[in-house]
Structures are given as C-alpha cells and as structure tokens.
Length: 74
Image (cartoon, rainbow, N blue to C red; front, side, top):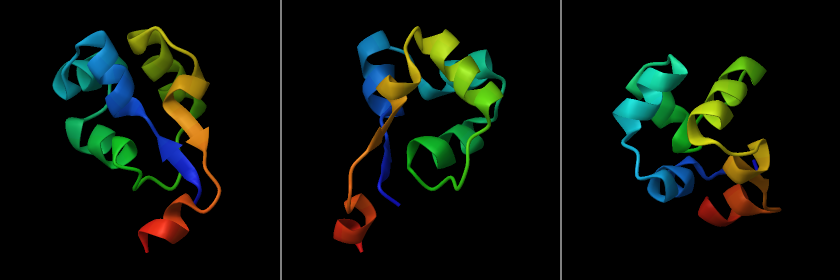
C-alpha cells in the first residue's frame, strides 16, 4: 500500500517518547508500534484525531501517499 506513516517524524519533532504518545492517545504501545511501522490495515478517525491532538499536527503530517512505496519494499 502506498500510504507512508510518519509518526516517527512527528515524535522526533515534538521530542516525545512512544510510550508517552500511546498514553496520551489512549492506545497500547504495541498498537502504536503497529501503526507507526506501517503494518496497520486501518486507522480509526478517533485515533487519528487523538494523534493529531497529542502531536499538535494535521493528519497530512502523519500520513502521506507515495505511489509504489510498498512495491519498492517487497
């Protein structure tokens, strides 16, 4: 899938740890890892909303479309 997740970028910009973000968003660190590593098949809008609120960003700061992104990794 050509959707790239840039949660790591925003975590670095905000100097926030994964555990802190997971706590603020209300999900487990394991589920956050699945999302940030691009292994999630879907994300709820409520989760995306909570991520944006916790990181003070827009959805486009976390997700971007890159044609052929997964094809190149395979």
